[in-house]
Length: 288
Image (cartoon, rainbow, N blue to C red; front, side, top):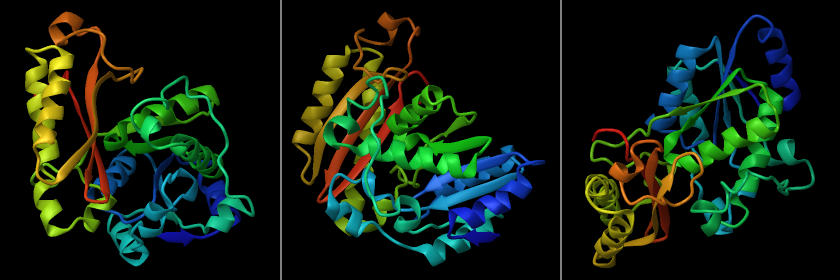
């Protein structure tokens, strides 16, 4: 495994390799866990050469406090990637990526960025689009792999690739969960024991909402989830919504029977465990 810190050195290595090999790319912000490693494994199974980037992108944080507190575990991250036989790792500095101007470009995502995370995190997806586009231009991957935990981000990146006419296929990988159902996230290590013990309630609620969605209309399901969290002793609900997987717009039909499976729907949730913000989602068209 080779580690590069500059764009020039990484591109020099890739220029030699990409002529005869397909390139799989996994962009990360570090603090790696088994969810990230599942992306690397998928990339290894699908492409010849796997590149992983580790870069905490400042322009996608809407709260400076979250940027400052984002965990940094580079030594351990590199050990984990080596254990997965990763080929190349890119660990640039902020200056290497942004030079002297740390700002986001503006994107049109056809409204995918206006709901859920976009509504609650001002400028977040412009920051995501800025860094992912730049990394794609540097790495020039054949396939790029993203986790479905950030499902809205996955759809937005697909839209960006389509609109920018980038010759890259985006692959979504199912959510990797802890033994108790909690979606794996780099933020989980910041949870206190009390909040970590409570956090599996998020996925449990999503599973129950999925069952209800087969018999009740969407408004009733949303109201049920909101009521459940109103009475929870320590977890605070920011939003819960049932949305079309493609458009990310709230459902217009009452339930799966009414929709006749023409459209696919997903339930999305964001909660605060103290100061730690956690997100999760569940497909409503698949069996539990």
